[in-house]
Image 1 (spheres, rainbow, N blue to C red):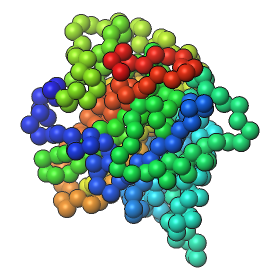
Image 2: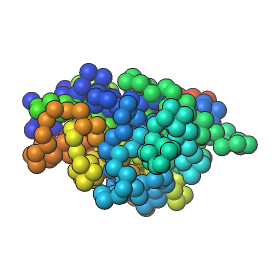
Image 3: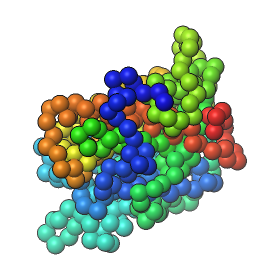
Length: 341
């Protein structure tokens, strides 16, 4: 077991080691093998507090302005991560349609409007068939919501179905931690960065110091100084603006305010920097949503908030590596899977 030394006696994964270890949240995937793309939805039985923080230079989003502190709408119904670049934003429309049909949404007079913020990654040049006559992402969003549950597939699934990294297939990853005070934190990520998740010339993950058990293959720690010049090379779309992006959700059962949730999202970006080199480039649209269900029976003090933020960054680093570890080879792939897959 390789844990950060200061955490080894205090933090352990939840029973699934998935973001759905956070009580109340469910995740659903939908993907199309021919398209080499897909959508992932995180939702809950009740509306939940959400926030967002963007650090990449090329984001693609829907309804993220309303997540800022001080906005009228305080809670959301779902968060969507999708492939498809700008086309993928339509996945949120499919989710909103299905939720409206079931009576979910923000009440306005006699109608309800589902609040479904979304973020997308670019996977249009990954070898899949993108010659559609009608945008497929609306239906993928609806399917993903229908599939939502506590267990879901990692790797080449959902929003990670067409993801790539600098030299390997990317993927959908997730991880969780339970704090000593009983609060649970989890992460969900579609890793599609311009950068590398492994040390050049090896199968060792940059996130190796944070691995728990063999959750991403026990490839081991870095033993010598890496060749950092090569971390930028290899990805076929690396120099196309907007052609990358890692998008994520970090969640907790703590009862956070929107400002606190935004702080958790900010801190979670440290996890991307620990797992991806380089991260937050002008060619990435790196974005982290935060979701707080408020089901934990624990008052959040300042020291608790610090622990939640730290756990969110650790979960996100581990989730990135797990997404790549569980990617699977498929016909037409332009990049190989992680060697230990």
